[in-house]
Image 1 (spheres, rainbow, N blue to C red):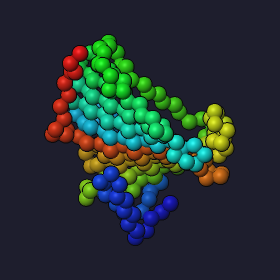
Image 2 (cartoon, helix red, strand yellow):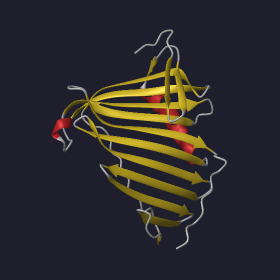
Image 3 (cartoon, rainbow, N blue to C red):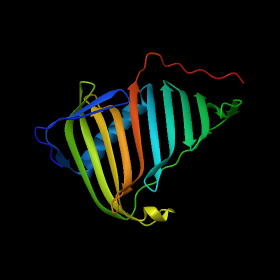
Length: 219
């Protein structure tokens, strides 16, 4: 999609996003190279990442996950995940100090471990039909950035939910500043025919936050 003489403004989570000018189609490598570099910069920097995930069933919101992931150089981390399904809430929390991990569930007692003790998984997309990659100029809170987008369609034949089978889409957007840091990312996927959303996710990044402090819990 080409944007001409058009300004698109989004206000959500206290963030103002402006998209300007024309959209330029780029190659897959031109899309992923700055993103890989931004991930490397992220790993080398103290940061706070706020994530919201929404999961839908039959087109209606079924559950949400809120994650706050903080990292303080050189080796401290605080990870808090809150899952809500209907009227039930599940919470898991992790604090890492060097090579020692402390975990608790639902605000219970802290326990010490020798390795990562929170969940997490990732999977790729198969049965690809087409992919398109673009870049355009944008702003976040009056800061100039580049907005990179991927739009992929695929045949969803492996979902355990029958209502998700069919031609589907995966859309990813990430905003990268002039220094190469990713400031925001949005991911969305769903069914194209008929149109139906599966899930969506928003990540907001804050680097070197002044009030970031991580300490081992009392156990």
